[in-house]
Image (cartoon, rainbow, N blue to C red; front, side, top):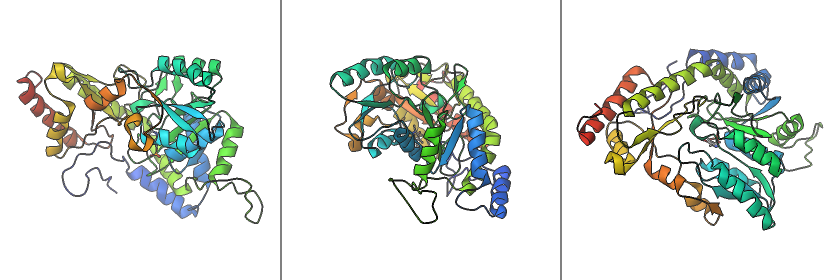
Length: 390
Ligand SMILES: *Cc1c(COP(=O)(O)O)cnc(C)c1O
């Protein structure tokens, strides 16, 4: 089986394609032959145990997506209708949507311009202001942006002192660390994603992580339609069909075996981008100083005033050569679906949205594809900077 790293048809180099091969094939076939096709099974339990062990939490619940994990995580800490939840404005839409699913309202907070992670001072400002107005702050949901942990050294005591649950959106950050602890372990509950473009994939999936075994038991119950353990179908509360299938858990177990190798490849790629851009005025890599990052996606930030060109110019150049890039997440306070939500913004996320370019970063990228990307960037820089970076 060959991993499809080229999009169909033709010569596209993708940003972060799934990295799967013979190991995934053998795990999947074994699960299939075992007869545990659906719904639960031994791979599901083993996958939960293995990820929890890796992250260092008491347990885990595997679900059908990172979004589902966030939804159940928020329910697990008691977020509900009427609450407000503090969410970074720079994130993927799922973080904010999960808040809305519970009936709570997100309040968006801007990011640190250097790291792209939530600005802790703004969170510290906001919580008492919301409370002074009589709001119940149901949770703070820091996001580990592009695989680099938020500042938990400050956020954990801040939330503890304020008595607000911390729900960690570690969807992008499996394998990352901060101050010696693993991404996914910092909140009352953490959420991972195994979507196809993430650091490891189950083709689609997610996981809740927590030391609170009661919270996990309840999440598992809600994820299986809140079905009571009775022979007839008895349901006392509103549940969801969120459980991950045993087959996909088997795929996840194979990916977990390869996780460190996949992170190493992404880190290598980031180091090469860092070298390439080091002599280029006005260009830096987002969060590049974080040695604990899992290097999920490498983002170059381009200051047009110093570079003389924009991130969008490089994106257009690479697109013409069949190389996929993306802007960083469009901030939530600019998203039509969340229009009207309250926000505390400084302009940092908007600037990153305007200046950031997410570069091909996948561990499945092979040397000829990587060489193509670097040659195309060098070609662009040679034209734009008169050869200084070539
Ligand atoms: C990918 C992602 C999610 C959602 O995960 P899915 O598995 O796609 O539902 C949530 N938050 C962030 C920050 C993400 O990047």
